Length: 320
Image (tube, rainbow, N blue to C red; front, side, top):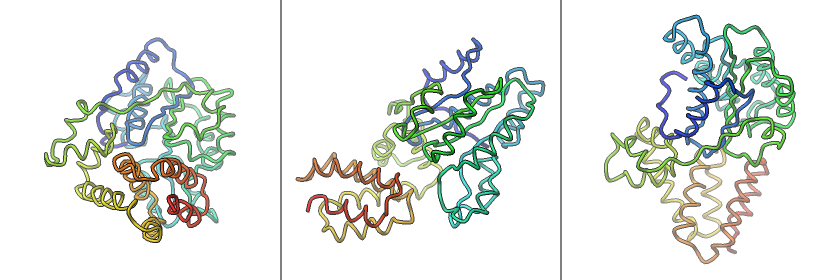
């Protein structure tokens, strides 16, 4: 949480959360729902900070510093997960998450981005201790990563939450959540930010790339922040766009080879599929209707951890 980016847009959501604090109408659980990189996590971190400042005895500066460094005793954050062969550096992990995850390194199948019941148990043990202030906050990013036992364990914590415990949950795929999780949280939707509001984030990016950046961002400030921080990110997106536009004119075997190359790079694969979706809208190939149904199904198969090779074979043959 160190050096958290500023909040871009979402004025209505911020106003609602501030009113909740002012009127004492703070819910025990919030669900921030919206597309990737739109700003849900940034607002969750800001709201946690505002809650932890309520009635605090330490100075504002000291509390903010503790929150930013993830050492505040009343703040738990479960963001990045320890994943064998993917993220095993505890120092890197500690910059985004401070929930104990040693159990993941001991698991027989730890190469997964799913949140398990042991992760929720770790949160339970920490949150039920005595806090130092009026509130104790727990932020969990992308709760669609939860397995059902973990989601049920979280629901039990919602049934009789200790006073002052506040869960701030984010999701990019609300449709994948258990209805009971949604019903027991105060849902706050996040929408794409207007291009006019995003334009200040284009500073430092060559002017000839501005329109492309806004097109790729689709109203998500986090995408533009990444372009500014990682100079190679923009070039990577242009390459993915080129691959996406050639996808529909390629033979099925060529399409399969493209997707197989991304089998172990799921984050990049998501970006490629995003560009394929944009290309589909712009090119409208002869089999447009079939592709428009096949692409969401392919993404759902990925989310459901269906055999990747079989899912790819089925997808690339869409117009055959």
